[in-house]
Length: 277
Image (cartoon, rainbow, N blue to C red; front, side, top):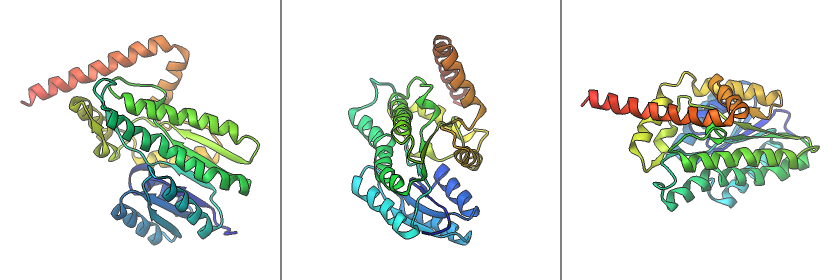
C-alpha cells in the first residue's frame, strides 16, 4: 500500500475543489481529481505536479454512474488507498418553486444531490474494505437555512445534509468517518454555472459571491483542519455558524429574519440599478 495518503475530489477543476487539491498537494498527499471540464482539470493537474505531488486525473460527469465508479476504482488502484473523498462537484440555481422548470429541477438534483449519492456509493464499499477513510460531502448553508427564491438549490443541499447524517450512522463502527460542509458565500465561479428563472436573484447571488470576505483557499484550510479533527458538521464562516444556531434556537424568528433580509437585498439591488440607469 502506498505510504502517502490520498485525497480524491470531484469538481476539482475550480473553486473549493481546486483549493483543496492544491492544499493537500502542498501537504504531500496523492491527489485524485475529476472535473467535467477537461481544460480546467488539466490545468489543475499540472499545478499539482509542479507542487511535487502525484496526481490521477480523469474527466467525469457526476450525473453518470459508471464513470464515477470507474474513476474511484482507478484512483484506488493507482495509489492503493483513498483516505479522504470529497464530493464537491456542484452547480448553482435561483428561482422560486413556481418559476423553476421541471427540467431545471431535475438538472439541479441530478448534479447537486444524486452526484453526491453516486460518489458515496462508489467510495463507501472501498473504505469499508480498507477499514479507514473519511467521506466529505460539500453542501451549503442553503441546506440548513433556506433562503427565498432558491428552491431547487436549497432542496438539493438539504438532501446532502440528510444523506450525510444517514451515511454517518450507516458507517458507524467501520472506521470510516463522514463530514458535511455547509459554507456561506465565498469567492468562487459558482455563479457562472447557475441556471435561473429569476435574473434579479442571480445578480444578488453573484454580487454576494464576488464580495465575500472568504476565499476558496480560506475555506479549504478550515475544511482540511476540521476533517482532520473528525468534525461532522463543518461551518467554515462565522455567519454560517450564526445562522445554524439561530435557526436551531428560534426557528420562527429565524424564518422572519431570513425573509426580511432577503427582501432588503432585493430592494437594495433595485435601488442601485435605478441610480445607475
